[in-house]
Structure formats: C-alpha cells, structure tokens
Length: 331
Image 1 (cartoon, helix red, strand yellow):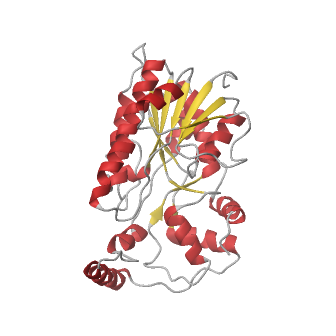
Image 2 (cartoon, one colour):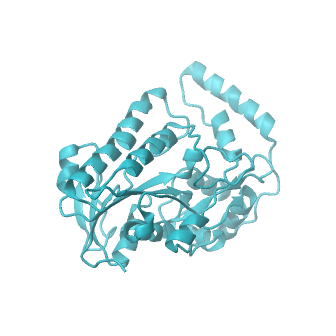
Image 3 (cartoon, helix red, strand yellow):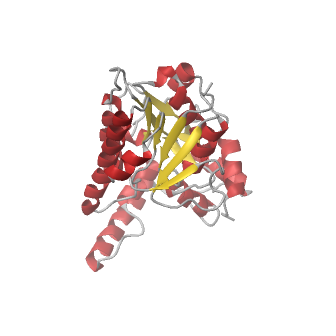
C-alpha cells in the first residue's frame, strides 16, 4: 500500500496522459506535486495537487521542485512528430536526454527513492512479424525514439545512496483516451468522415488506454520489484489495424470501410506529392513515411508487468474506444 505521506513529483503533468497519471496516483494515496511548462486548466487536477511551473531543462527549477520528494514520474518530453526537420534533433536531445539527466541528477541529490521514466515501445522499431518483449534489441528509427532510448539508459544507470537502482522504465504502447493526440486522433477523425484505409489491415498494433497507464505508473512508483527494470505497458494484447478500425467505427456508430487502397501505388503517389511539395517549398500533406508508419507491424508483449508488478489492464479495445469517443468530439 502507498504511504499516504509519500510525495511524488510528476513532470509533464499537463501533457496528453498527464492528468490521468495525476488522478491515478492521487487515488492511490500519494501526495502530488506537478511540474510542467504549461499552467493546468481549471479542474484538470485534484485540489490537493501542488502545482509548479517550470522546464525540465532548467537545473535550478528542477532542483527546487525536487525538495522533499520521495519519487518522480518523469513524463516531460518532446513527443514524436511525422518527418521532423533535421534542425529539430537538437531540441529532441536537449529536452528528452538533457531534461532526463537534469531530473535524475536532482533526484539523486535530493535522496529520491524512485524515478519512473515514461518511454515508448517505438524504441524497438517495427516488429516485422515477430512479437517483441523487454529482452528484444532496440532499433529506434526516429529522433523521438532515439532520444527516449538514451533517456532510458540515464534512468537505468542511476543509483541511490545505497548503491541500488533508482529508476524504472515504462515503455508505453500507443496511448489513446480522453486527451488523444497524434496518429490515432487523425485516424479517428478520418473514420468519422470519409476514409479509405491503405493496405490489407493485417499489420498489428499495440495500444493502451490512458487510465491503465495511470495505474501502471502508480505501481511502478511503489513496487519494490520495479527498481532497475523495464516494462512494456499495453492492454495485454496486440490488434490488427482492421480490429482497431472496427472498434473505432463501432464507438462512432459507423460501419467500417469496406474498401482499401493498395500500399505500393499509394506510396508512389505519396513520393510524387513529397517531391512536388519540396519543389514549391511547402510541407507535403502525405509522405512515404506516413504510409510506412500506417502499415508497419508493431506487436509488443506486455505480460511482464502483469507477472512482476501485478498490473491488470482494465480496458480492452471496445471499452477504451467507447470511452474515448464519448469524451472527445469526433462526430
């Protein structure tokens, strides 16, 4: 059981999954201090949450926020975007690697007992027909995944005053829920209108609902077996893209698309669009990378955290997407 007086610092608390994590730890009985660059909107957090505004790359602000803290959930990061420009690499490194180093150094100095890093299953790269687990080699192929991989090592290498591991890493599946963003927000909006999928839809994806992410974080903060470990956080399975589309359409009250477009020709067209957009100096609305990401296979095993920490996902695809659609305006 959590110590009612244990203070947890949550960085990036106003992000997409942040409020879910704050509420989960609050319900688990922890005291909470949030730390983010944005001011939380009214009602975002329970009234008992102490709110601090600051940047994880600011050593002075981080050290100040770390005073009296027992554990940290480090979520603050520059997230993935499709086809980022090369000049953005420096910012990814500064925020995701440098920010993590700053948080860990301050945590060690303050005598914090646990640092939980939110990472991503994107560090594995495509699964290419295999099922990946925590022992699988990492092949990060984006700025985001590469910098998260480096951040993981900073956390896993950290040691407390007793020489024992200080960190735990949660590699999250694709997160969806009340503040859905990114690829799945775009897919859901497309399915709410007129959308024809690309490919046969048999490529697999690994997802997790945001409320389950919060519950996993609460376990990782307090469970002795989490120290020095990496855990994939998923809904307990993986799903074909067709199954995901069917679940989204069911929640929207729509029939899933009956037609699909072949990958090869669509990728060629995307390449032509890229070339044309580059010629006139604008950003292409669709790229070959977009097509590749849509059709890639990502199957990741999330059973270890269930066995080791007793994590039990509460949301399957049906329940998760029904609640997501109810809490967002897609229709």
